[in-house]
Amino acid sequence: MINADSAQVYRDLAVLSARPTAEDMRGIEHRLFGEWDGALACSAADWARRAKQEIAECHAAGALPILVGGTGLYLRTLLDGIAPVPPIDPAIRAEVRAMEVTQAHATLQAEDPQRAALLAPADAARIARALEVVRSTGNTLAHWQAQREGGIGEGVSLKAAVLLPDRGKLYARCERRFAQMLERGAIEEVEALLARQLDPSLPVMRAIGVREIAGSLRGEWPLSEAEAMAGQATRNYAKRQYTWFRRQPPPEWSRIEYDDFSLGPLCDIICQQFMLT
Image (tube, rainbow, N blue to C red; front, side, top):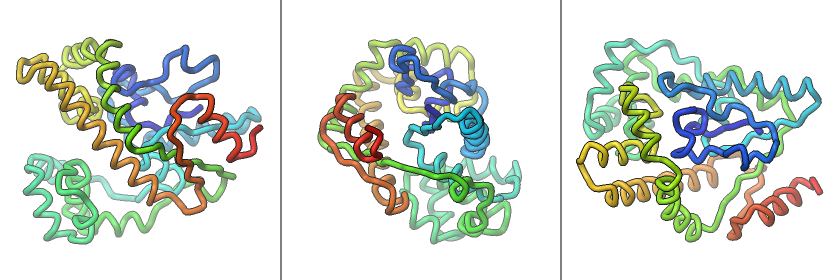
């Protein structure tokens, strides 16, 4: 198994990313789980570079690499390649990142209206990225993405399954998810992160649950409110993922809809889909 989840790559987020435990792994080799220290941001390009290496090693050993995870940008970068965007001017990056998201979105509407139309007005990270690219390079992100390079999609035999669980049951699981994380040590995990005094803009500090628990630890809101906030953020993220994976991957990728979340029936569905039984 090769991890393709942008939170599970960080060793600091074992609980809050629901990273599989040794018991969950059942003796099967898992790679790229907990590989990055939280002080270092793992970009899609960083992950794709490592994933290529892991896939090549599996092939050389005669093993079948199975990628698991829901970070679409990671998978897209690995398969389609990365846009050759020149380095961003640090001064421009600092200026853009200092903007409120409403100001940044309004500015992007003026400087790259096509990209602005594709992004949610509250999507601070993607809005900032698009704006800093057009300001620093003089070309839009779409211009650079049209020149993608380094993807492995055309050089491998790929079988893909997009899992689309029943939405109602999925959201109910999201409600229970954070409560379970609190029981498993999420508060201690955030305390350890805060003790490191990491840059708050790092992905590990922006993971769902970190901000909410950190605010509770600082006395900004009670733990019950942190739990409600994290639950809502989880549902929102699940909704975005669901929509992305329903629409974005190629039409030939299998879409598997199901309402039974137990491991056995789900494995049976996937095996039947790929004739692995």
